Image (cartoon, rainbow, N blue to C red; front, side):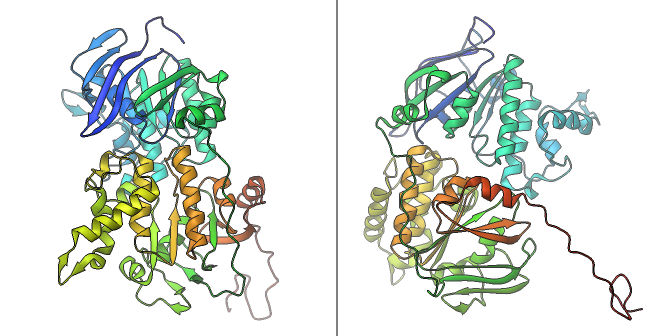
Length: 517
């Protein structure tokens, strides 16, 4: 930690959103040249504090000092001019612009208002540091969410910030990419840059941070040296009580002869190469693969979101001939997508409307919506899932990531699906919410719903699945049992290089290329 003057100091900072007290008299000092971990449950106030520091939110009361100077008027432009940048959990990119244009947006080289043509050279220099391998000319809207996350990280680095708030920066990255980011954080620390690392991955906090601050219910519980903390101690401080971090026991798997609720037979598409799989009622089947392996594409093809070129999708033994999300929902299927904000929820509509949107016919008679029946059904689910705040009219856009995810579960559980696809169901949620979601998944399966589970956390997909399909290059390349299979075994099989088939001597009358002379 370099300087005697803190990089950022907040004193008695408070922020309120309507009836929700997001920050309650928070005081915290961030040293210059340190990596400072910020942990807590969803809704604890971590992201709100980061957004106040980055100029996205204005505090209702309290003091903010930046490099020893009191701040009275603060917004994102003033924050960036002072050297403070935030990488928000919600990506803020311009979809139609290229990767390089997004990275240097607002920081383009100009002379008398004329742009310089050095964008590519500047990008290449930054890419050498990051090692993400992103093509500079690719439009951001064509990139998967994991690569968009990398663009956000590169944009922050391009601003040569003195303080960088990273809010869940590894939520969409692979293990190797996350370690690369941790190397960049250590490099920034050596340069004297302060990094605020907001994450739910407590092992990453303990392994990469100098100090860690625990928040709960909008307040700072404690700040301590990371070397003196333990994972169990952090969890207990976050939740106010010990929590069982073990995965729940799975319900008994259905017999192999049970007819599948959903099935794919040799399905091929733009990103799929002959995928076959089946999920039985009450069974949890996992998909394990690296980012870009085709896991999400399999889920979308099953749900009718992507067109298939050949092969068959069956539901309850009947071929699906009218594939579309609307038809899938009507059959009894549901899907929780990996990007809840862009694909799962309607922002900023209230909780009630988000939950009942696909099911309005259930609460309508003669074209009239029964608000009383609708509210009663949603209230029951909100209470069961522990959504906080529990207000049915609450603006979903200001809810924490974990509570947004619970609302998304409520949206589809209201329809009592027979088959449920879960794509990264615990991405960006805290350890407490994750534990509750695990239990919920097991309860759903125990009630007879078939589940297809996709997760980048291999421990999660192994521990929660009866069977796990290994996916590589848009194809299922193997199957392993769930609990009891080691993560190392799965990684080894996922990284196996396909062996070329031995060439056979051409038969009489054929050329070496296999064609007729």
